[in-house]
Length: 271
Ligand SMILES: NC(=O)C1=CN([C@@H]2O[C@H](COP(=O)(O)OP(=O)(O)OC[C@H]3O[C@@H](n4cnc5c(N)ncnc54)[C@H](O)[C@@H]3O)[C@@H](O)[C@H]2O)C=CC1
Ligand SMILES: O=C(O)C1=N[C@H](C(=O)O)C[C@H](O)C1
Image (cartoon, rainbow, N blue to C red; front, side, top):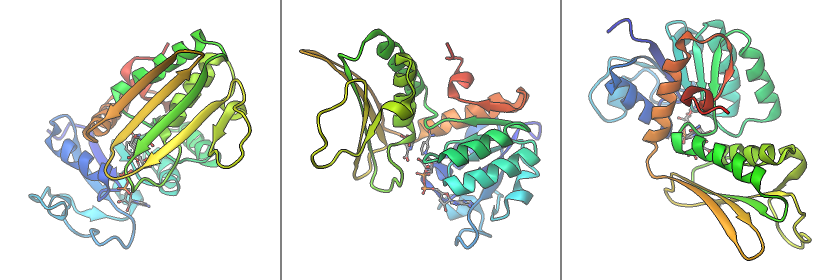
């Protein structure tokens, strides 16, 4: 049992954090060796299982990442961009695999993560599910097959607590569509239409975001042509699929050389 990789979950009280803790505790493939929350959080100092309203798990919620990561073979991280950038440096120092699910990362954040990946394995994906990662590959292929007569729009819907838009998944899908067309997403991305926007530019990739209720995550990639529309869709109805992917990534990363990877690597779906 003690040979199993030890995992620290950051953002332990969050929607994804709690899902991950339950999954790891029941997995039989990994050990929960730490539960991290931000300093000042009222769960710090409590047993994580009891804090979640269940049986004690023998792991106390802590707020010092350096101490926690020192006993980890992997850090699974669904928090916020600023926390994730800090954790990338510290996990690399501890030579722990860092699985990053956090979205809303700015270019500077991505640069900092890339630097950390010189020293340790980092697996980062805006969506850890098998279905979405397959959809990424399908989107790339369809975008390569259809020319600019087909307008590409990415539409996403999430719960009312989500703080970033477009979602990490929508951006993955937009990147895949741009790659399929052989262009840079930065050059063709069209976000946040409002007012007299002018007609749509051929070749643009549009993004729209819906926020409401308890929607787990829904993504459509629409290819709209003259007289026909092709729609690729993924619907997540349960957060456990993201947690399952993250746990798989943490185990997959154990014998890899330092570098930045994504879920296509983990799932063996790279072209
Ligand atoms: N890649 C994927 O498959 C998925 C990614 N996400 C992303 O994961 C992130 C978290 O999502 P949720 O769990 O829904 O959010 P949440 O708001 O429920 O949880 C985030 C947690 O992180 C904690 N946190 C913030 N700063 C911290 C710090 N410095 N140290 C320790 N803990 C800290 C917060 O206190 C909170 O408990 C978001 O960016 C979301 O978009 C969510 C689901 C799937
Ligand atoms: O915040 C969420 O909930 C989710 N975030 C990820 C994203 O931004 O795409 C993945 C999933 O859709 C749920």
